[in-house]
Length: 221
Image (cartoon, rainbow, N blue to C red; front, side, top):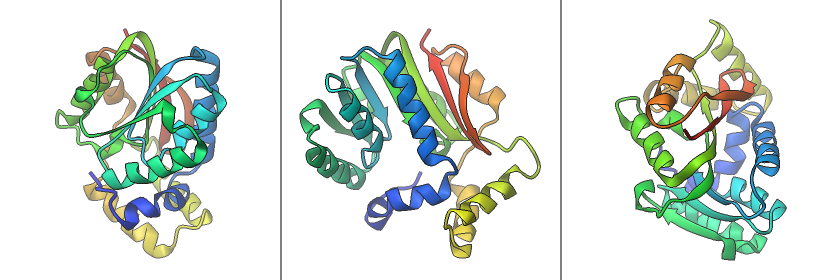
């Protein structure tokens, strides 16, 4: 899994928009669902919070919500803390660097956007989903988005075509293609559904798809 240290953390927000077609739309649709589905004072866990984009957007729109921003990158969370301070929401956000299992739980919802495809399917994906489930109250919602396996022979080529239109350079394409071989562990929908079911979640409903990047909403059983 990438370390997201140093320049990787500093340049993340600029870089990610060139790598994920529909990046802003994914977040817009996720936040809209949170707005209509969650209580005004909901407690939300953001897994892989990175530089804090999701937390800030939800916190500014929902002044009574509280959050835990979790990540394994100290550098990313240091940037997030600066952003929370600047946005005036730091008093409603707990930062947690490390294992999800160290948290106290009882969250009303969780977001896990563009995280799980970095986790190998060797038991590690299942452990991540189980750790998230352990933190959620019964009936809580999970919004999860990941890079999935291509559904057509040309989907991946089209993905990189769009990324170049978004500003990804030829060198960036080469590096990303290499990363696909060693850093990304994409699932097909059947395996994804199986992992959810085995770790305490119900049926996932797709709410976003931009080529191989797919967003699902699913409820705890």
